[in-house]
Amino acid sequence: MAHRWKNDLTSEDVTPEKYWLTRRQIITGATSLGLGAIAGSAFASDLELNSWEDITNYNNFYEFGTDKGDPARYAGELVTSPWSIEIGGLVERPGVYDFQDIMSQMTVEERIYRFRCVEAWSMVIPWNGFELADLLNLAGVQDSAEYVAFETLYRPEQMRGQRFPTIEWPYVEGLRLDEAMHPLTLMATGLYDKPMPNQNGAPIRLVVPWKYGFKSIKSITKISLTTEQPPTSWNKNQPREYGFYSNVNPNVDHPRWSQATERKVGQGLFARRKPTLMFNGYEEEVAHLYEGMDLTQYF
Image (cartoon, rainbow, N blue to C red; front, side):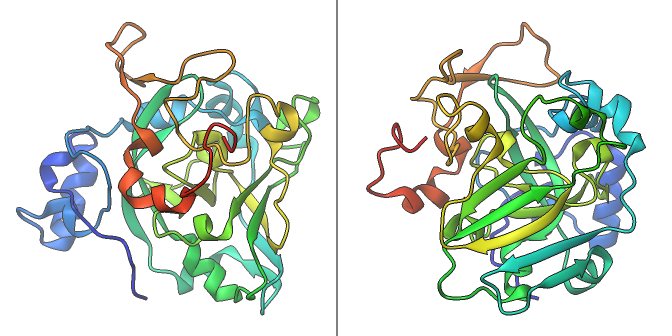
């Protein structure tokens, strides 16, 4: 299956998780190209990856609790096999798709993205996955479709956070179709060449690297193609603070904090903050999607 994303990293761009890097270099026979042969990134190549410990122990996944350590503490209760995704709405081949069947038809690649969440913190994560466009094409998108809606698993007996009305459950999210079909938009199934940990959204989650982290819905069980803009959980919960688009825009402050600077997880609370980049550093690749839009109104 052809992939449409360009690769521009070298082995020098990847420093933590040396065993993962070494194994990938052996497999690919890479020398000076290293990870550049299998990873895609759109921003400056002087960023080091976060460690496995950073990525898997500092999470927002309210289905397991509101503390950033709750997902790592409690997500082990979640059973992720078997797993299926219902794909419906404006598609040619609606149905319930088994996760393993999906994986057998997709070519999984490593993608290194800077991944941001609220409160102006960031990580650089080597995701494993495939383009969302490939999955949507598998189901067959009808011409009238304009949006893609997503829904997280609802299983309060295993996801203890769902026993409390923190937000309206199940968690829902949405993208415009052109955003969903963009080659940067990833269906992630693992990280560091390992299966996706439960606390990071096992077995399959969305990654939209130019948007804030809460836009990347975890543990997906349902995808629907629609003509109308779908509801999103945080927009329903706090519409003044969270818009539908949720693009990284350092020029628009969150009502309760500035988004102009950020700190990288793992460097300590007193690490020097850096300016936040427009669209999280992917402006060249995605700005055209929003031409003519007032990004202070459509935030």
